[in-house]
Each structure stands twice: as structure tokens, then as C-alpha cells.
Image (cartoon, rainbow, N blue to C red; front, side):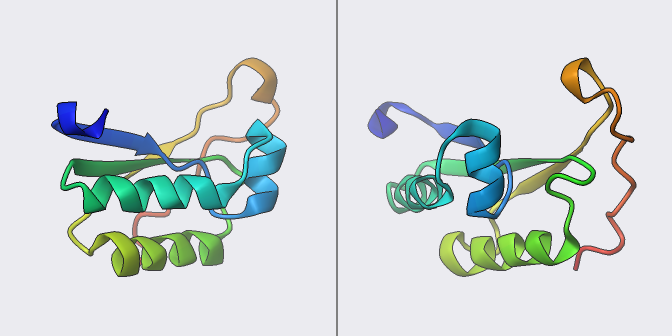
Amino acid sequence: LLKYMDAVVVDLKGFTDEFYTKLSSAKLEPVLQTLKIIKEEGVWLEIVNLIVPTKNDNIEDIKKMCEWIKENLGEETPIHFSRFFPAYKLLKLPPTMLLANTIK
């Protein structure tokens, strides 16, 4: 299908297998391999990451994710960090704190 696409936006939910398995019963590695394939095929790729407090907001994991993206997809790959707001089954969680200045 990639040969028919101009761009792909992938929601990279987190950067640990534990989080991926708990959230979606999936593994992280196949997602990472898919990102590499998209890039190798020359399709424009953007990544979105919803930062959910206490679930996937570990700053070290976020830095590892950014480093992996830089090394494997290129430093020009856009990453969009989305702020979580409590809703539905996650009403007891706080909104995401603004981390923009701490991610380097």
C-alpha cells in the first residue's frame, strides 16, 4: 500500500514493550520495523506521541524514543507530542504537564 501513499502519520504510543503490551496487547518491535519500512520506501513520515501521565511519561523513555527516531529515521522526522486530558476510563489521571522545555 505504501506505493499509493504520499504520507503516513503513525501514533507511537510509547517506547517500552511493557506499555505496548498492556495498552494494546501488541509488541513495540513490529511498530518500529514498520516505521523503518515506511522511511525506506520514501513515504513522508510523521510520528505522534500522546503523553499520558503515569503511563508513558517517563522522560528517559521519551529521550530513548527520540534518539531511536533520530538514529533510525533521521533527525528531520517530525514528532508531535500531544497533551493528554482526562476522559472516559482515565478520568482519574491528571492532564499532561508541559514537558516541552525538558525534552532535548
